Length: 382
Ligand SMILES: *Cc1c(COP(=O)(O)O)cnc(C)c1O
Image 1: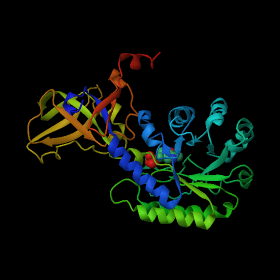
Image 2 (image 1 turned 180 degrees about the horizontal axis):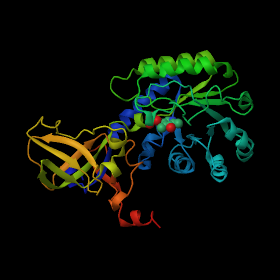
Image 3 (image 1 turned 90 degrees about the vertical axis):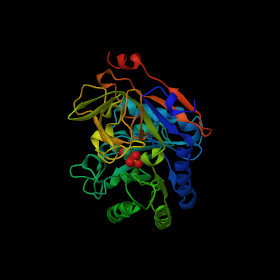
Image 4 (image 1 turned 30 degrees about the vertical axis):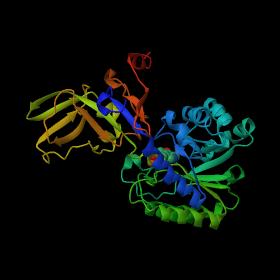
């Protein structure tokens, strides 16, 4: 189908051309800086696009066994050189045995986990690269819930907790300290990271700068990022990795929903066949207001509605939006930029149907690649 009007809602539509534009920017960073960019599956894991993604990115970073398997089975099949990097805040032995078989890099969160499992992992996979995640204790992350370097953080090893004996095992160090940030924020983190840890870089092969780099957002200083990476590589003779999630899926598609009902209760209310809680979780967690195509702020256009989800949670509200014409049941509503951190987090809360997944091809065809139904709900519950 070609027309959004014909889509059965709710449905996420990933636009291949926009996704590829992001990938081209990331590839430019790779080409110019010599860094390798890998996809953080936590933010975007629509594997029906991996044929395309794997033409540009060098692999995936996984947060545990399931993501590592997805990287190994669904990404690597398109690109046999693709790398699988796995990091978990802590590993269970059974999972790690499987992870070791399919990962090229394994990142530990603490010296204690590294000492506990390094020999086991090396025995299973002698070629695996080991790394420790560092907490540089500097971050200008805008929200505490997304700040890996906040007070009492469990993510990464601080200098005080660093144990030099890890250097007998690792050939890499990782940090991940940013969230939706510009290159200046990376610069600040690097100052602290180098100040504290560069004395340990001597025998290292790789440094991983984590994710949170808003590289594909308009206005991001890509040239400055390239310079920082080049300087760092030259200074220390190491290979640099970036592992963005959001920057891959940034502004490359939307969520289409339908109006089911409208009525007045002090203000005009519209109920949609989607849910902020179940389908757009970051709008409540961050929180932020998703943009809706052809709408304005409350009161900006003639007809304003409060958009609510089709669940029984009172707070399942997307926000207030205004339109030139009144809305009626059956109208389509398009939430912009709903491809990253959406369907990877969806739930079947309240039994609400999971949105379908579609890809808009370069020729304009919208192809539904996955639909969900009752059994997806039922089978998760017993
Ligand atoms: C979440 C995460 C990423 C990706 O972050 P984005 O903000 O999506 O770029 C990369 N590395 C680690 C360790 C993460 O936890």
